[in-house]
Length: 161
Image (cartoon, rainbow, N blue to C red; front, side, top):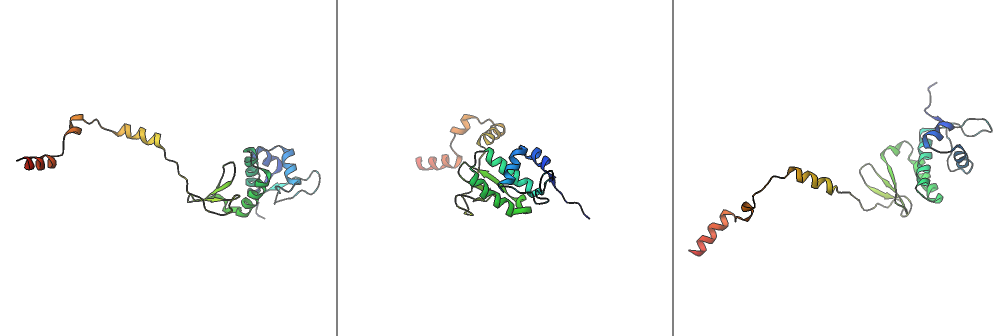
């Protein structure tokens, strides 16, 4: 029989940096559930899949960022639905909405306007570009800058003659 990749509850608590009492509370309220072995009474160790662990970590990160529990529950459903496909996705919390950042950089609202594509935001590294330009620039004599192009000089001479 092949082995299944998974984690015990203590491992999940350690990796996700969640207190055991918090994880127990989340299980009791059905916010998160272990899929490999569910709670079967006292002293039974729960076993969690890789997707379960990612879900717990997502819930923890969103809660730490101040995301409301109602929003966390909606995002949790999306994360679980992605399953193994979640590797192509990143989540971004902006204080109002959770935004899915796809593999190609496309942005979609998960909460405010579910599945609506958002304006593509980009960051321009102006400071780095300026530093690169300064390093690459060559000195130019100001006299060269004030000189008119040769073709302009010839045409003026022809007009003045």
